[in-house]
Length: 188
Length: 188
DNA sequence: TGCTGTCTATGCTCCGCGCACATATAGATG
DNA sequence: CATCTATATGTGCGCGGAGCATAGACAGCA
Image (cartoon, rainbow over all chains, first blue to last red; front, top):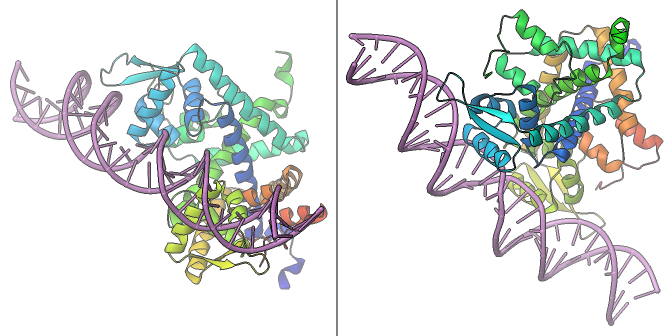
């Protein structure tokens, strides 16, 4: 009652709930669209997108990004390699490590995944005007930077990103500002 | 080059990419937090939240909400019933249908799931000031209403919602405006 | 009464993936 | 230089979640 005259913005629980549903719906759309263009359901889409983003990743770092165990990631790489989408190469300086790369087919597949993802995000935001989109992205950028935990977390966050489409990536910028060398990590 | 002088807001691909990463990160947090308080990984958290939101759901509608096949949902309900979190009751008017309800333990578990979810959303938005949160939620509300497909889609969207915390639910309002009877659907 | 449709439960099978372990390589130490 | 510890990857094994197909019960209709 006493709260009835308070600006609706103060309704924290309601705001969080609505925002949570919104984020979940958009994420559902992204995951479904990405998977629909991937060779198989599940983490394959993320694997392709991550390797497009960061050629030369190791099994260990790919596992972090796609959220599987070490063995699970090895099997995923096995399957994608069998389909001719990924290839394993020896590491330039570390004989234990394999560096993973997309093949030409893999790049095509990855482009399809990322294009499909971009389409659903565009559809999702299509009712907003440019000023609203700018506001939304300004907020997104700041929250991404603030919530970023570490280098490994960045691979999780960026597992379905289109690196080419992300000029001046806020994650890269934040890591750089924190002195975390991402470019050098697991690069061939 | 010609675009160099254009306001950054016009950088559509970059905006969509950053927004997509943001939505995915928040969704990851929500799913991880919810699952951490659920009795098992996977769709159990959604099942508990949906039944808190809508006591009396059928197997069929629960399957839609949690994204499993019919048989998979039956097995999930079997497991949650075995743990004393859910119970099956006969439908009031349709002998074929079972109505699903949370037990007292199930309500406690569901509350835990939703509390954990609310915490991570609050953390995620903690760097924003109240005006920004209001803007974000205004946008979220409009996009949710605009993107809502049908009644079944609403169960997908709301599968991890805290119904009690969502006064004046935009999904309910949109369905009502479209003349879709949600309250009566699968209710006991 | 019989037929079609809907809802639920179950047997069977598949397969993705984690656990534990083996092998190869790298780095540290004496 | 030899040895030990740590790191990275690959593999056998087994588990269990879940989809497919089917059966049975109930509802609606002619």
